[in-house]
Amino acid sequence: MSTKTVSNSNAAVIEDRAQLIDYFARGEKPKDRWRIGTEHEKFVFSTRDHHAPSYDEPGGIRDLLMALTEFGWKPIEENGNVIALAGPDGTVSLEPAGQLELSGAPLENLHQTCAETGRHLQQVKRVGERLGFEVLGLGMWHDKARADLPIMPKGRYGIMLRHMPRVGSLGLDMMLRTCTIQVNLDYASEADMAKKFRVGLALQPLATALFANSPFTEGKPNGFLSFRSHIWSDTDPARTGMLPFVFEEGFGYERYAEYALDVPMYFVYRDGQYIDAAGQSFRDFLKGELPAYPGHKPTIDDWADHLSTAFPEVRLKTFLEMRGADGGRWGRICALPALWVGLLYDEAALDAAWDVVKGWSMEEREALRNAVPKLALNAPIPGGGILRDIAGEVLDIAGAGLNARARFNASGDNESGFLDPLREIVRTGRVPAQILLDRYNGDWGGDITRVYEEAKF
Image (cartoon, rainbow, N blue to C red; front, side, top):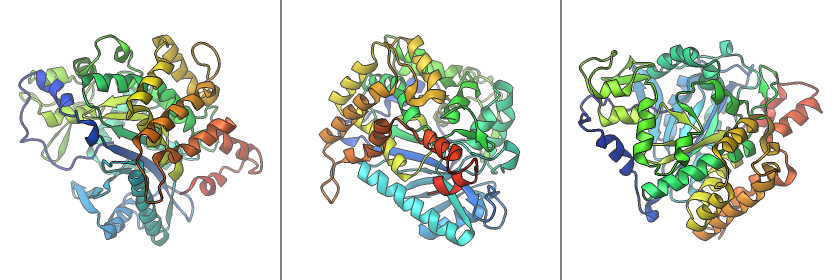
């Protein structure tokens, strides 16, 4: 989730709705300036007893952040608390229960983004050896109840924690018990954005399946392979989902802006403080009639904040965010951007990917998305068969797209090798969650603590 670094009270006020639409157009970039931004979250646990460290305890989350400053990261504070770090490799921030996130810098190729992830993980490992913690690559805490988890001192999280139970039964689980991998990608024009959005949204269930890695809840199998994905089905229907309007003729910036205006607000940020506006309307804010902040109109920074509080499977800001994957270890963190860069950053690959999904109806897309959390690659697809039947074809398209990019490292390797972990999953038909379940039901003998050793970085 986003971390505020400055107040927006002095930013220009929105005077015309066209400014909302222009915000998206400002993200347009020529192809030679397209970049890759990779984000990933992981769970922090004590090596002594596996508890999730609180912010204030010795060796806890605050100490973790401060120790990372030894590597050149600069602290970002909120109300006197260090809640994030900024540096050349992007931003290190905290999710609500102390999940540690790296929001990587916008980079030119996958070799760079995977190296960036490796640097960060090595830094965290070195700090952890000294402070007594390690980190896990999972989609959901496998053994923690909500009550077992701390809350980080970030103002927006307090507002969200109060609001979530009003609109869904699983929103608190989303905030406290999940981790994801996400990729942020550029577009050249409104038409390019729309095409990438459609392909990304239609194939998001495949990403969810390939990265499914959350089969346990509170120490027992939960009946799902990606419970993290299932959680989004009952978090807040006003701000989640597959966005049918994206596939309608004429979809573009204006239609997404209209959708975002209908997403209820969470907050207004002014002078270092979060004003609780949960459930209120940005349309009222535009008129200066927001009950939580009467007589004031929003700035473009408020619009950017508001866009960060919508949680569809693909999200538009001044770039596109692919949001369907469970958290996982290093190879899968590198594989997710490889999948989407291969599919979306080469025109021939983008066309081929659209050919795979363009005949699906909205009802069929929704049915696939709803089936994947339980069935992963065995989910039925439109026209017959299962998701695994097209997974290899989609990976081949992505591989061709990466080959066409011809971005090489010092050893002469192009980017297509980053797809290898996904190719292995398709070859075996076993997603990460199924491997964990096999071991839990097999040689682990139901010992859930074995997940710590299996899934740690």
